[in-house]
Length: 232
Image (cartoon, rainbow, N blue to C red; front, side, top):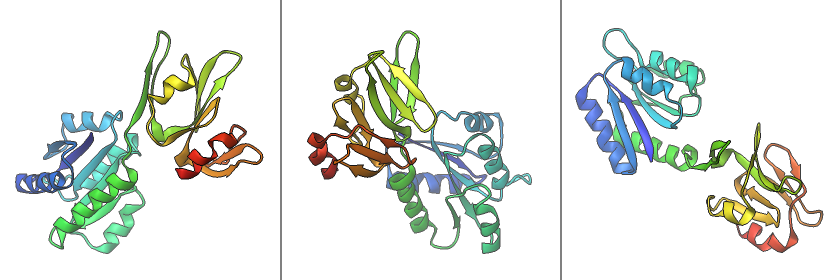
């Protein structure tokens, strides 16, 4: 489920944005705020969820959407930000890169079409919130699927090792069982290895290795799984 956070001091505009969001997706949660308060600050601090923020740049009481974006980016660089604005292109070019803003959309210039297009683009390209969740006596894991590079069996400890960009996690499962927890981006490329096909840049069946988008070369690619890998 996608979570949208709207910040606008006009109830009519909040209702308009909610209506447009629901035209794009019903699988969502929408919360709204008219100002910076303790509830909004708590929402921003909760980085367990990947969100889409819709921020009006000019709010009442001399508060701006830029101030809110600054608070968001102090703790969260994963969630998307869309600014609703009346400002000129110079303002946009100044702030887009600073806060990694997805889009600036003018209120009175083809707003409905541009807003829905931006939401569709985020959901299509960037919004991947699915997670692998594992709980055992001494370990609790919540890993985004997109962060998992590959999974292999450690023959000495007889455990699976989940490899991400920065860490390795050992869990007490086998290859067959863990496949039921994963989605279709994961392919068993060897009897002892599962790979996230979205992270693979090169496959060499002759020498039995694949190369990840991190540059790492992994020698666990089986010829018997060639057809499955190529079809995907």
